[in-house]
Image (tube, rainbow, N blue to C red):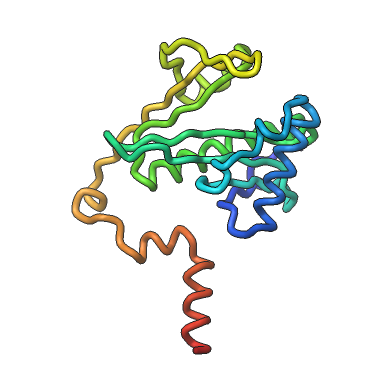
Length: 190
């Protein structure tokens, strides 16, 4: 039975979780897709936020979010969206959960534009469901594959809270409560 309530998406917070995300990417892109490792793992992994999705407590999906510019409202790249075959066949809500959480994070960071690329033209319909459109740029060719650039423009939320106040330290820490708890524990012991 398919249930979206059993899906939990979180930001990777440890090397162990990052390795779980890498394992998912290896299975989907390398084992299933036949892509070489140097296309899947690069220096951008060290300057990005990674999400992991758990379904019934088991890690089954991942996605990378990379901030590439803070100019003109800011731009992020959503990359390396991957869900294990068994999980995606049984519960397509995992993709939706990853994308909705990526959107929340991107908006929280105050970014207005999301870029991505699509190799398989059949997947363009999927991305359109989430508001993405082709940028109109010429497709990128890399190692014999053609990628269509896509773009999502996020609406700027204008509510009383965000207009009156910049993000405070407390608000920023709430995004990573376990980090704050570790700091408090260290201060109490020290």
